[in-house]
Length: 191
Image (cartoon, rainbow, N blue to C red; front, side, top):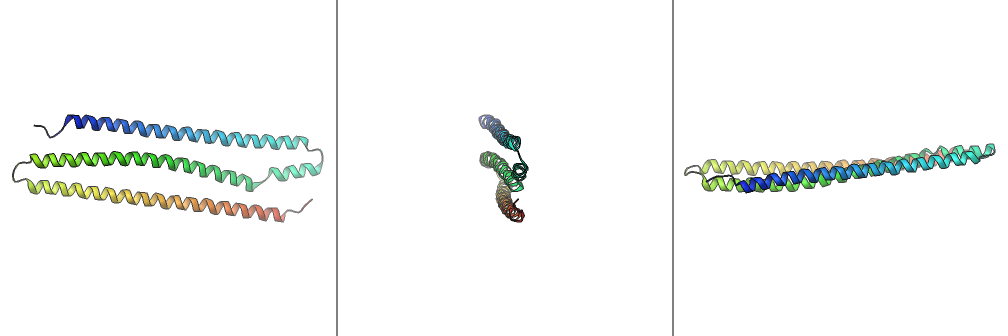
């Protein structure tokens, strides 16, 4: 009699390959979305630059040139576009990471179940007098599970804290940019 069920072992190996394929798929999806975001941003930036050059081309007097120059050098708008791009990149990366973490969590749950089943098989087939060893083994398994759960909860809390910090920093930066833009517009003298 064997303690290892070859069908379960084969099933576990297949599940691991499937998990790797799913993780690779999520990574490819994320990379594709990032590429699309970069292309969209590049296109929008390029279009804005060409529009600005068109405005320069039709400027016929110094006043039109000054107006073009003022509209061209808008640090507030540029900073807001950069903040928006960074927010979208962060959301994309965070979403991809969350999906991969969910896949890994499901796989860890399945592996834990398999280990528990193995411990039960070992306990049933253990020779007489080995109950203390089996009990210690079960206790160690429960402790490892508790440590894993605690670590997983701590990692989730750390991720939430980091996400909240990034959101707060982005909000503060956006507000500072808007205030700087207002202050800059208020100090310009009309020509």
